[in-house]
Length: 237
Ligand SMILES: Nc1ncnc2c1ncn2[C@@H]1O[C@H](COP(=O)(O)OP(=O)(O)OP(=O)(O)O)[C@@H](O)[C@H]1O
Ligand SMILES: [Mg+2]
Image (cartoon, rainbow, N blue to C red; front, side, top):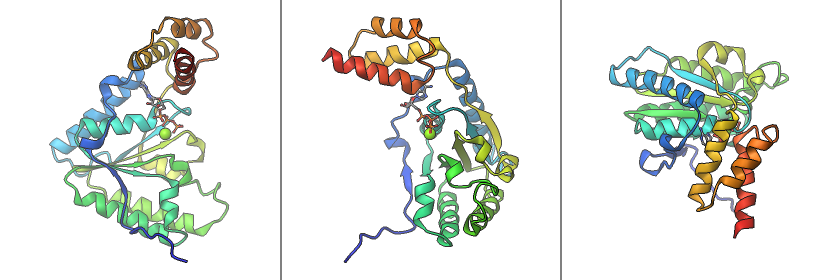
């Protein structure tokens, strides 16, 4: 039987022209503050050609707080290619080969004049040594990652990891990256997000605003609010 083959060199790359995530559509004062801080640092390093600066960030926080979205918005904003990698991608080069895949990733990104490497849900890619229970390929893989990270040229590449399991991230990674916590949005921000989603769907937002403000404990995350909007949207058709 023939199986489809994909080149091991292929990575999922989002080009700025194909990247739909625009920072102007994203809400939340704290969210925007953290975003602006990262953007300022990356722009500074890229423009001033600081090759030995901050090489990466570790964005952590609850499920659905916008960690992945923030990195996509940044890539579009600074017109950079985004290398999007997750656990499944690294596992494609099973066992010993995952080291090669990590190495290829950094080499590929390094060829571009500007690149962001996003390692999404990083705890599944680089788990802590305690968690991996002696699986030696993970140790080798993490070591390749540390080595490659230390070699990153911060004048043209930035590495961003996201996780909602900060506790499972290897300490050596935490030591190398700048950790930033993405907070859960407050109720007013969630109402703003819901209102703009309603607008996109051609719906009135009054009813949804009322539901959220009367039951703030049931709506503490962006995903919960998005679900509510979808339910109301279906009812309205
Ligand atoms: N600041 C924001 N304003 C409006 N919508 C947002 C914002 N941040 C995220 N969203 C929306 O919220 C949803 C969840 O965002 P995202 O997937 O980036 O969260 P996450 O923190 O990466 O979640 P997970 O921990 O599950 O990976 C997406 O539909 C996204 O479009
Ligand atoms: Mg995510």
